[in-house]
Length: 356
Image 1 (spheres, rainbow, N blue to C red):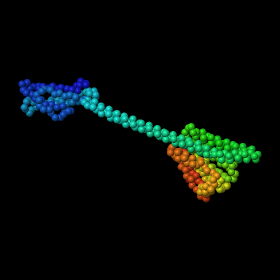
Image 2 (cartoon, helix red, strand yellow):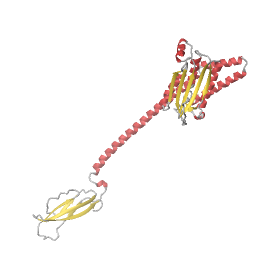
Image 3 (cartoon, rainbow, N blue to C red):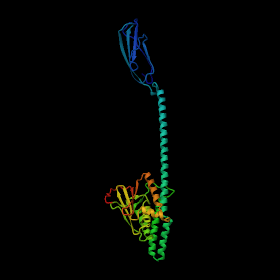
């Protein structure tokens, strides 16, 4: 059939039969109904709303009131535009409703996703601001007036003794220590944010600790000695860690472990790498936590460290932001305290810490 035509009237007539006889016809369109139509004398059949496809039309003929019939077959095809198919607009309306519903659900999902992402960004920003706050205040805690006053007093002592070399040496130590503090402070500017991966090299941190302990030895002669053991199988310059995590615990060991009750103490800082983990152990042979707490409680003017409390908060925030840091503080057998920090780094060198 011509393209776009979906309606057909099929006419038929007998061949080889006398025209005076009464002829009856029955037909069927197999694609619509396999049952034969009722017998009729009209020599035509009409079909409308045909869908695209191939059709088989069968018609049979008989002389009126007889049972003998002959059958003939006609094949034809229908081809029309999709929008003329029966029920197209009904189906299109349903499809439109379904598509609108899907678009609405997609819009809601996108909105919720961006809303959730926005909340996550705000929460991360708040954590970064808190981390900034604690890092800056950790630095400020180390530069307390008591520490500055003692340092200046020691310098005044060397000046009065007429020992310019010793005075110059202490000024250089203080300058280097202040330089490290200021560098860390710049990385923790309150107008910027401190990321979870904000780190310094282990060499820089060890240098800061060395200057600090040497200066404390000058301020308190004979109070303690110290030793720093670095990783042997890993280049120290390749190891990084968050800044100013260790210094408050070193300060605690000196002020609580030694100054409150023991001279000639020894402080050991031991660093090792195992895989991506950096193990930092600070061991002192001072009077221990319990005795230090009792002495501190009995003395109103005793030293109180704000740095360690700030470090606890920084560790909590760093862990919440995806960086693994574990802190473990135990009593040392025979007296003293052991502080161990386990910090995940970007270093991938495997190392056996069986001798650690």
